[in-house]
Amino acid sequence: MKKFFIVSLAALLCAQTVAARQKPAQKPDAKASKQQPAPPRQQRPAPPLSSPDLSDYGIQIAPDPRLIVMMTALDAAGWDPTPEGAKPSVFRELLRKDQTALDPLLAKRMRDFYERNALKGDAFTPADQAARYVSLAYTLGQPPVFDAPARSDDLPGGVLDVLDFAPLLREFYKQSGMDGRLNAYVGMHRAVGDKLRAPAIEMARSVLSYLNTRPETIVTERVSVGDAAKNAKKKNEKKLTVEHERRFRIVPDLLAAPGAINLRAVGDDYYAVVPADVELSRSEARRAYIQFVVDPLVARYNRDVAARRLDVKLLLEKEHERKGRDLTPDVFLSVARSIAAAADARMGESARLRSLQIETSERLQSAADAAARDAALKESKEQQSAIEDSTTAQLADAYERGAVLSFYFAEQLKDLEGSGFDIANFIAPMVADFKAERELKRPAEFAAAVERVREARRRALEARSKSSPADARRDALLKALSDVDDLLRVRNYSEAETRLVALKNEYREEPRVYFALGQAASISAQDAFDETLQSERLNAALGHFRQAILFASPETDSAILLRAHLASGRILAHFERRDEAAKEFDAVIAASAPTDRIHQEALAEKKKLGGQK
View 1 (cartoon, rainbow, N blue to C red):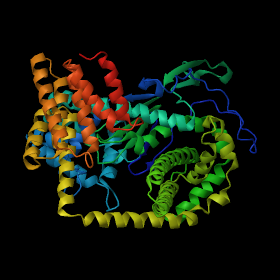
View 2 (view 1 turned 30 degrees about the vertical axis):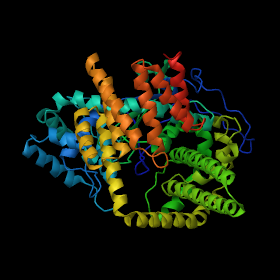
View 3 (view 1 turned 120 degrees about the horizontal axis):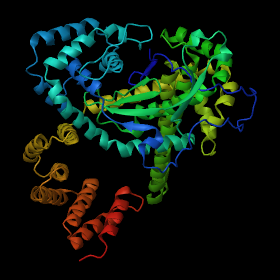
């Protein structure tokens, strides 16, 4: 039976840890210096961080047909994560149109099963309700068979509760027409996954650069050959060295609850299930990848962690008594989650503080007098305090969910930032040095900061609820354009164009609408095999981009203005109208800072032109 490990990052819940397969390292002196080197890794040399190959980071991006069918069936069973008052996502609308002919009796049986087994209580979110079914999907075989596992305590937590949904899933697949539409659905998910490639590489580079380490992508283990039970003596038991890969598999899910990112680890493969609009570098996906990198490091030092078992258990027991919340008793899992939570929090805080520093510096340089400088410094200090409170609240949430060393490791990592040393060198000394009595004081220390963050969020919600009609109209436009982006992701160009034409009639001088029309025409041109049709679509896109430039204000729509000039230049370059293309790129270069990405893109595009004609 496979061993399964589940981390629901949407709810920050964990079930059980992956069994460590590496040979345990020798325990160092508890008072060893943090400069003590770690033993060499048993894996192939890692590529440089500049590598453009996802596999070099241990990452693979691909849809999973099992998950697509499961989430489609779950929607038919009545699960709906759409916020109250909001419209369903465009993919969910498309899916429901496809399911209108579903057998009503089958749909009722599925709804009855879902309602009967739903988690009870207002505290459970739509992501919580779906989590067990996502776990079930990863225990099943691929369609059309969907082989189900035998009932066993080795199954992920919660799967036994919904295991009897598997026969309904098979019946749904056969009767709903999913077998004929699945390839199209997989293609839509793959299109979303293709757009995640560059962000995934950027996210992985930032994590590995911060930890100054490399992912362990090769696992080496010794396995018994033949029937070991027949060997009278263990010394006669034959062993074989086997290598296999570890992978962090990003799985796009167009039906996921908004913002819900879940990690499923099956053996040595980690599956990060992400919604379509996820920002990998700013979401729980980053923490999931950190977990993928950190877990084998903690497993390597399992003896050092085991030596602190009693202290970690004491912290878990005290937190359980304080909050009355069930926490994992696995000390290895708690340590690994604490390191991941600490690294994620420190990375986020460092990035926000760097941005604040740059913004403050610019404000000080442009300040007209001492009063303006004082105001800028005061506001900067307030924002810095808010950022630090936010980090504290993030670490507090991790602490309360079982990562009871998250504050401790955050402090240790802060001291290591910029040192250039691999975090693997410091796992053992850090684990050896923490003091349980110090960590028990954390809840009293973080309570005030957590309350300040809650109050700030409450005020922000109140402010949003008092928005003006103009704000509501703007929000409606942005939501409609977001829906169009979703349609373009799944290559539903006709529906995207229909919605954009309607928006153009409603928002006649809105540059965002014309820019979106240009994007839709430009993207659809890429899929056109006929050169005449491709040319027509590119010319239409060029016209829309020019309309966006016409209506865009440099003061309020500068980003749209620059992107429209850049897009126009690329189309003109494609048509070999080089002088016109150069003017578009020059407009971007003149209106942007040399450090801006769009400035650099325009320079690169102009360089490609060579000699203009």
